[in-house]
Image (cartoon, rainbow, N blue to C red; front, side, top):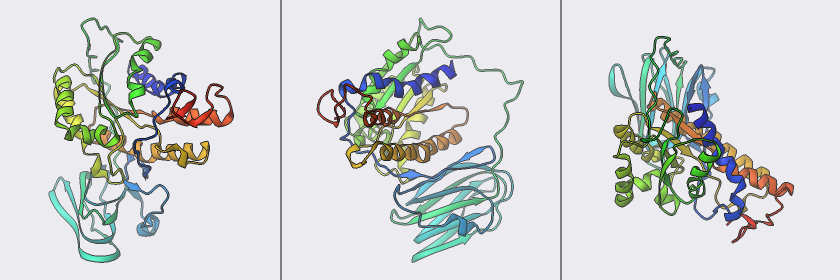
Length: 372
């Protein structure tokens, strides 16, 4: 059923091709186009934070490493919680920043402590700590919003443990009174207008995919600022509405949509863990879908190839990194990638190829346009 669910969620983004042209895809709300970089060491995917899509990094990781093996690297600005890593052997931290003051702290088997502190000052500088013990470690950065930094972890990450053959599989939870094994999920979609065309059609997609017993609720607020995870948490009325649904303990799939107002800052994604923690407290078996919409202001991209390349970079380097962070933070909880924006990419590719006979313009106010 889980494989079917993943295929179903991915198909949501592609199945919308059959119906999107009639209503158009909205292009007015703001969606940032900043990206992150992602590296992989061993069997563990590793996160990094953000850099401008069109800008080079302030720091050269290759030069800072000077031949040392890098297990993970993080880059961003302002204070941030970089999450948890499991390091296979002793390691060091390489820290670079363009200003101060800046503090880097860790929490591991030896407790919490500051491992580097840079005083107030300007100009790019770097520091490498002494050796730190292997095992699980949580890293955090404390600094002003305008301070840019890079933190690299040398060494190698521990491989993810293989599942035990003696492990008893969990019993699937029935989500409705009439549900049966293999039935659909009780779904809650929260977000803004970029996700509304998909949320409203999930029931149709479930029926077309022959998934029985699908149940859903939708809570939306207009605009990215109001409808992202952070905005919905800050809105007392919206939060109460969503929590009332979660409090029933029957929500098996909670879907949220990107992005915070400052996607370059990893700390800006604080709203997603808030909702994850709350949902899991009501139903520990809750799964989470994270949706990435298309790029706003499509007219600023001169052709389909540029539009596609920018969206794919955003998806691969930012959104998948966010999901990897969450999987590390909540082991055993399912986080599913829902690439809504893939529909817009495919539509624009087909439009420029001349294969959308009922579409006459890229942006318009009626059904003859892809975006409105």
